[in-house]
Structure formats: C-alpha cells, structure tokens
Length: 382
Length: 122
Image (cartoon, rainbow over all chains, first blue to last red; front, side, top):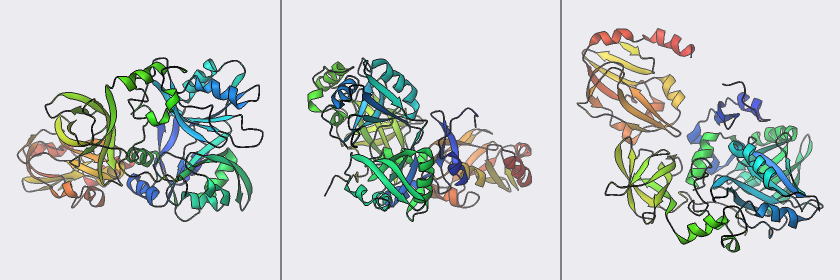
C-alpha cells in the first residue's frame, strides 16, 4: 500500500483486529474485518457495528461577534438548508452547492448545545471532499466569521444498530434522551477515568445509532471499551456502503456530485420550504428550476434476477431506449438480493415501472421502487 | 491431474474432460460470493478466455479458462447457492466441466505445490 496514505488514530487497532486495509480518500482504511462484509452488514442490523469514520472532516464555524445569527446567516449563503432557525442541539443534513446548484459535498451541520458555545456550528464533511470544502468555506465565509478545522485533534466513530444506544448510554444514561438528528456534549464514565465526547443520534446506515467525536487518545480508550461489550463488532467500509445503499442514502461521488442538484437526488426534504424560492444562496436558482421543470430523478431499482447492477450500468426502457444510469448498486445482504439506485428521465421514475438494466451487454429486468430498500429504524421519540 | 492458473483457477482433468473452478485463495480474496454468471453448455472457449463472472458483495471479477475447449456442463446449483463457492471452492463450488481441445495447454499451468509457492509469494 502506498506510503503516503494518511492514517486515522485507530489505524493500529484495525491492523491488530485483522482488517483488510485499502486506500480510501487518501487514508488507509479498513474495508472489512475477518468476519467479512456480509456478516458485518447483518451484524449491524441485528446488534451494533462500530465504524471508524475518523477520515471525515470535522470543523467549527463561529462569528467574532459571538452571536449564532451571524454564523448561521454566513453558512446559509452556501447551503440550501435553513440554518438560522436551528435550536441548540439540533442537527441537519445539507449540501454545499456551487453557483450552478451542483453539489460540492453533502454534510451534517449541528448547532452546539453547551453553555457559552451555542453560537457555534459543528460540521462533518466527507473525507474525499474535505480539503476543497474547507477551502470553499474559507473563501466564502465573510469577514468576522471563521472556520476552525479539527482533524488534527478529533476522531470520529459511528456506533450503529438496534443495540447501539443502549450500549453507549451505559456510560451516561442521558444519551437515551437524544432523538434522531439531535446531539449534545456528554461525559462518559469509563473504568480508567471519564472522557468528554460530542454525540449525535444519527449515522448513515438507516439504523438507530450515534456518531461520537472525541480527542484522539480518548477515542482509543472509548473504542477499546466499546469493542469489549457483547454485541459490538468492528465494521469496515464494505458493509458501510451496502448498509447505506439499502437505506437509500446517497453516496457523494456516486449518487450525487457537481452535476446533480439536491432536487434531482430526491433530497427536497433537506431544503426547508422557505428556501425553495430561488434566492438566498449559491445555486438557489437551480433548486427552483428543478422543482418547476422535472427532468430526471434518483430512484430505487430492484433487479428481478440475482445479478447485481453496478454503478454506470445503463438503464433502458422496455423499447430499448436509454433513460438513465445506475449510480450505486450491489448486493443487499438484508434484502437478500441485488439493489441499486440510479437516475432515470421523467416520466420513467414511477414506482412499479419495469426497466432493463444492461449488465455486461444483457438486458436484466428491474422494477423501480420506493427508497429505502429496508425500513429506517431512526428513533424519533416516544 | 489437478493444475492451477496464475489467475487462481483450478482444473481437474479426468480422461479427456475437465472440471474448472476457483481456488481457495481466490474465494478468500473475493469475499462473500453473491452471484455467479456462467457460460452456456456448448460455448467454445479459448485458453484465458472469460468463462464466468463472480460477483462478491462489493465487486465483479472475471474468471478465465485455464485451457481451450468446449463447455460440456455448468454447475447450475450455484444460481441458487452462490455461497457454495466460498464454502467448497474445490468441490461443490465448481463452475464448469469442459472438453480439452489441446492437452499441451496444461503444460503451462502449475501443479499444487508450485501454486502454493506462487500464492505465498503474492
């Protein structure tokens, strides 16, 4: 493996656990552990999977005047989500857009919920985009609003699955009070001393679970503890991809990129109503245009046979006309068969439509289906 | 006679027909096999020509014929149970049976000991 690959703080642990390490977004990352992708996937849906996502970018945005409004308004010029109305502890999914409304990256934004710090925004961005994201933010945030990059200080892991919250809340019972897309700062009581972590009830597997940010050395202690708990197994990038695909979640670089808009990608739910007017942020006109003139949409595709359709597989209608392309596809272990997502021209996007996926030159029938392929298990409160 | 190719196919020769599959090393590298696309009985194949595609959870990989010949049988059981390739790559997980058009093709292949050395060097 290339020597110039970066390593996360948990690198040595992955190697000790027998992970197969691969280059990913400039990092050496575990693609699978000895359990294998299939079992890792099913384990996450049944118990709790621990993912090292320390390669992703973490940063804070804050205004010199110390107000939330200034920082929020600055970020609102770059993303289609409403930020200014976020409450402390609230988290939102959004996208950085270019001038044409194409997606530069997708990200999670949280308003910090801690006395004296609730004017700050915490962002998690994709590993492969983080350098350009940070440059984009630096270039476009106004004077008086600053970006603070924390990759050299903070690790990030995701604990996902139906047992995840029960397991992490043994270290602080208050964590059970979080609902989906909220977060907080927590002191976790480990046997060898407490540690502080920023925990959000979110993830990218379709399961209930948390993402945990902590200082590198604290994270090593925490991960050592979590892996000693019954029900927790380390999970690699292979299963992370099949889990998010079954959950109908977009992968940047596959399903969304600078040529796609959030509307085409089915992410309209992440653009609050008052942000759909065509003004107020970079690329806003494209949002309004794609809402008015429907050209193509990202859809779920369920092949009728067993052959998986991979990214870039051509989609044809039943007359042999090309109507789109698969953007993510593979085998869904929980579905027990192949699943895919891709763009099709409207009006071929209706659920129930039969299309052909051209796998190795042969037509394989598939049905257009509603996403996700497996029901999401997010905890939205009692 | 059992021989192996550098692409990790095995071929077991009994008389003038042979059975072909992928090695234990190959199935471990591929991970969980979820689909195997096989050729049709009667297909003429060249040495090193593609005979199958193995799909793991993550990716598709081609399988090549170690020698030239004609496909005389395919392992239809793999359609319903592709995981057999992981469980028994050298047995129940075979891919095709074929006739051999030129037995001298076999000379270019490795015996089991040479293949073991080859894998250890990878």
